[in-house]
Image (cartoon, rainbow over all chains, first blue to last red; front, side, top):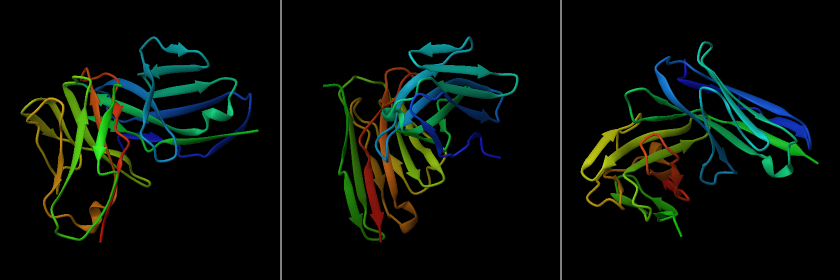
Length: 110
Length: 112
């Protein structure tokens, strides 16, 4: 089983739609969680960190469910510019290794 | 401008010919890392460095070497490249170990 798993998609949604992605992690010792965005083979860029209490940044909301070992990303009012691959990242407690999921591809359609 | 630079951006080489991909950051970051990205496998960490002269293996270190003699530079060395090292490579740096990573633009390496 992969340490971090994501549905590869693509998720095709119309502009203005709300879309949610989940990312599951297998190691309960995972400590830090992030969502990164990657455009078409360009470098990944941090979208948001994921805190235990959940956090929101504009149209984006991230949540952590430790009991079920997953994190989620919710995008409201999708824009064409949101089309990208969203990468889930986990860091295990006591390590300095970043473990990336393979990404979920989102296409927002006009 | 705060950035991570990598050179070369594109490289085609032959099996066994030693090569170095350079990585430099101007943000005075302590943590630096190398990744490779392959279709269906995502980004996998090769090596990382907590600070000058402190490096450690990531998940896929075989066939690679790194050094961290200066804080700003973290070169990736392939002493004897093989075709299975054909990939897209990213260097990244972070001011905190578990903080935001800033990625370089990537190096597309083809080994024939």
